[in-house]
Image 1 (cartoon, helix red, strand yellow):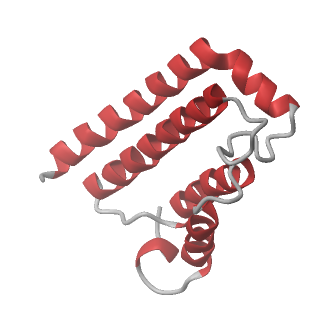
Image 2 (spheres, helix red, strand yellow):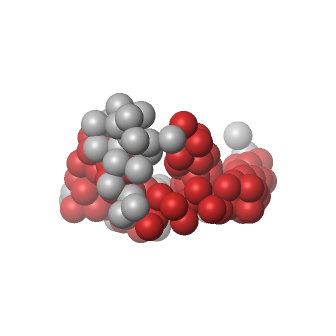
Length: 130
């Protein structure tokens, strides 16, 4: 993939992330507010019988928007010859932390561990640029 194709893919993914997230908030903002008012803890945990199915759907829709943005960010960096760096790893970590709080029985804790490792590691790649 050429740098211009990588840039186009990155911009497209970022735009899609924004549109996807805005559409979710516009269509289900009341559910997000309910989740926030409840404290967010286990607010999208499907194993909790008090969690409504729409909360789970809205949660995953927002997570998908966040992941699209992170993927777009990677493509934009690659188009400039820059590997994902500490800032990207921090964004990934925040997304994983939000997910881990909302679904504590899920695998977001593993992603959070990876993000912390990427932020603190020495050497090339994630610990260097971006």
